[in-house]
Length: 72
Image (cartoon, rainbow, N blue to C red; front, side, top):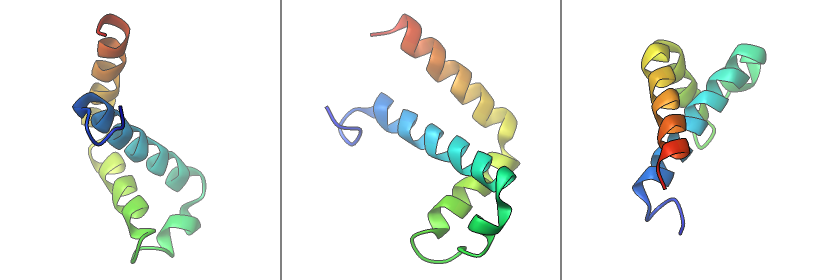
């Protein structure tokens, strides 16, 4: 099933997008800072979410990992 129809997979894709964008912005800030508009602006916004809400994003990652290990 695709991530569009399975809510748990959709959350996983969003969490991975936020975490990956934040990591890329920490390592190579010029790449995302020059692309704040358009389609690449989504990654810049995800990086901002990851930087500003990092404790909550980490808790979501831990919860998702636990649910993947224990759940179906």
